[in-house]
Length: 214
Image (cartoon, rainbow, N blue to C red):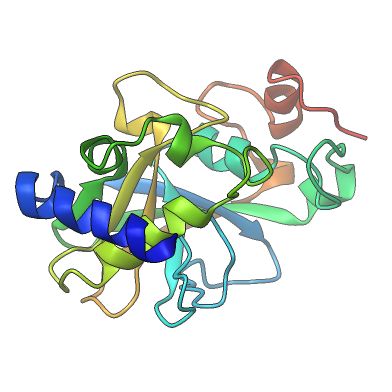
């Protein structure tokens, strides 16, 4: 199946080109991680994540187009797994990092590329447990794109848990390792001191999204 999916994606690129999106230098993005990790620029080659490298060779770093998406994506459920509540200690252990594009970034619109290859939006935004293939399709798509050329910095895709229509703020970036420096850290706030751009605390925001917190 992997080879047939690769062939479909490569055929779409050959026929229609890469649907590239340019991100201007200085564009702000956000990332949530545990406070004990001070460096927010972590490209994980071993991750079994949505756009992780299926060959486990090229690292991927995820960031969001807004603080709200960064929080919603990270705390859509507890660490125990899907359907489990977020624990107060999990919130207390995290920080929000603000970063900016160190240069112009060229990323591929994952939704357009998938559609050109005959897939639908649900194929790139579904949760890992949805359907029969988990992240198989998105990882194959990422594997093709990250090896297309070093001029491609990553993938742009809409948030499943907090979509903001027709806005970069409602999207995520999966950035690929091995490129020139992509991001620079700007600031960091621990969750306990954080007021989100919506004026809410993290707990209030999760409550609005009806994500249980214990």
